[in-house]
Image (cartoon, protein in one colour):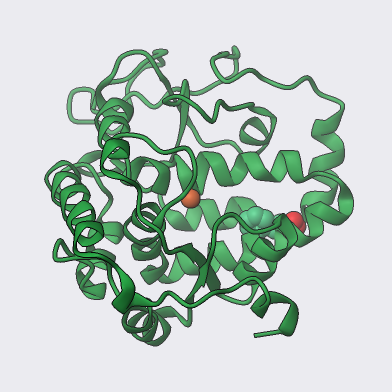
Length: 282
Ligand code: PHE
Ligand code: FE
């Protein structure tokens, strides 16, 4: 790892976790296990199992990194908290996932605005076991460095938000979760699939990049991909002309619906997609 990146890392110091910190992990993990079995995408559930991330306690990052490295060439690097944007992107571009080490307090089980070890490890890391998603995250890191240079981080950050953190995927079994912000939230993992309030729209790169988001409440809009290959293909083109194109268009508020939006309609009489409707059921 380059010196500049290494400067932002710490030791996980796994032996130093208190028994009560492991107990908080157990509570969170057991609760999510029950919810996610039928709600998370296959890639996530497989990754979790292959990594042996489980209820017994906060995992040792070195053990996870060895498994992850063999599978997709990613490693986890322990960091104290959010790192500067460019450092974050450089880590991803080098197939390094920066993970926080601390765990939330017992009175924060339901909600925490900043990432903690449960969000980072139980939410993000299992997805990195999927080869296509692993490549997407690296490409995102490279794209991040480029977006900073071009002054379009606002547009690129929305792509991360609506895919990596809050993405949904259409499968033969129905709508499933792949976004880590949802996977680590008991409330939102139910709300995102079942609630009639939020919009569930088919993924469209330009639409996503123009859409604002709220960081302090459940999403008003989710974007649904068909599979990870679609996401990877849609994000492969050079974004520079796309940034120029969308910067003259108005931004779209988190709750807005446009005439050209395509709703995800769930199962309708055995078909994966039915007529256009503004809200969908699983
Ligand atoms: N293709 C993007 C660009 O040129 C890079 C990117 C890939 C960004 C994947 C996000 C996700 O900037
Ligand atoms: Fe996150």
